Image (cartoon, rainbow, N blue to C red):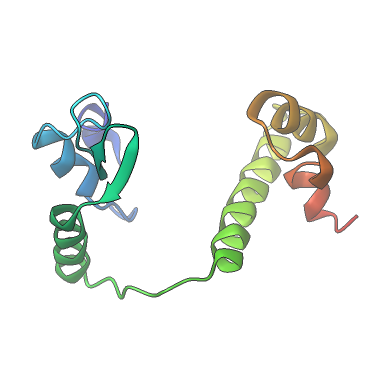
Length: 124
């Protein structure tokens, strides 16, 4: 699927080929014992080969790698979800933000006690 999208991908959009390289190397995850991680049974272990690939690709693209805290990672994920939710509302795909939250909680397992990404965007 990634290769099929090459022809229509916006050239100005940031794209990193790491996943392409992993697939080309036959690293399809648990079923092959290697993917983003190395699998020993059900245990996923960091694979130095993948780490080296990520570092090389970062250097080639001029991407500065930065350590992020768990809170920073969650804030970025939530901000991305909220931005997509706002786009869904703007396109009229959903009529209200609570519709998105219901789907996220019941369909995707977003933590119920958080109320959904759009609820959190309202600061309620």
